[in-house]
Length: 163
Ligand SMILES: [Fe+2]
Ligand SMILES: [Fe+2]
Image 1 (cartoon, rainbow, N blue to C red):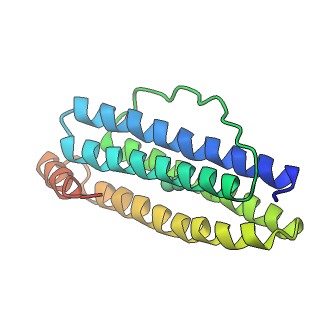
Image 2: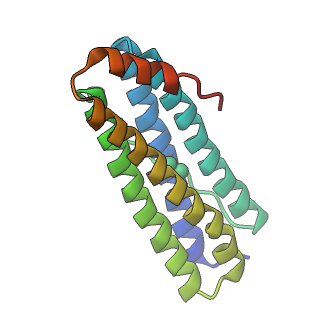
């Protein structure tokens, strides 16, 4: 059984993952509308992944006989500027989520909830990957600067993401 503090922290993380999903869905629509269909597709898949992260947490709460508490998801912004600004925002957001994951991990440690500690290990590792991926896209977009042919090439490449 989860204690109340742990349960609240996990429910809060469900909210954070769903907020990520909502933000990336908005970014995806923004890219699509700006004719960057590849980045749009990549972000749509990313939005689905974030929803998956939320569901994995929800299933965990339920498996520990915890009580789910779904919270309000604020509307994300609709405008994001250039593709570089879009992915800088993704990176910044992932860094924010990493801080939340670490906080949750720390709480599990303090509460001596070893099952949650082990469960959260997956999220700690996932965040390393998420930040690295976002950083790589930011680096590439910085490299190409305002060369639109290179931007379109990158858009095509990232549009190959299958899930
Ligand atoms: Fe996530
Ligand atoms: Fe993420």
